[in-house]
Image 1: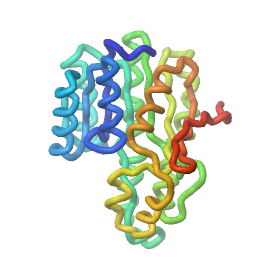
Image 2: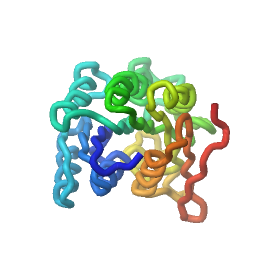
Image 3: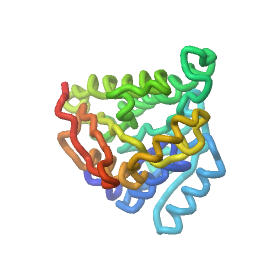
Length: 251
């Protein structure tokens, strides 16, 4: 898909991968609805886009609340007349204490943000995109959803769910001209790592990490790829250099 003139929605756009991707989408000519729970950081993203002569509309809200999620999608229709691209990106780590000692309500929150909101966001998006002739949905998964992550098993489970959910929707390309795909980052230098409660998570930053802008580039690659339906795009780092490796195992 060509991005110029399209309308995009990015969740978790207040920082990190979401902010970097929203900026790239605006730079490539999309009008962007940016959503985040943190209204302050969200306004910062909006200012950055507008300072670069881009078009952005911020919507503060919680992706696990149905009314808030509906408002994010509704804003795209009200402000720009429709929706063509969705980046289901909002995500959190579970934090301490590590499962199985994690309180139920805490790990349920991880599943709600990292998996439920992706499933529900995709469900809301499909008729909106197909009604405009088709579109692209990119979900943020993780290498933790492919390889596992002992320090946060619930996060790994949620991201693994995103990968298989995405692969299971490859048929939507033929049925509704809606491409659903996902990006699977390795270690990315974001607030999720720097603000993690578990000190073992901080040690991941001692390994070669990927800047959020590199993940944004991978998301752009997926959006432009007409054959991305069901694809899980792995993005890893070796010797400090980032590269993207498409996952050959697709349904």
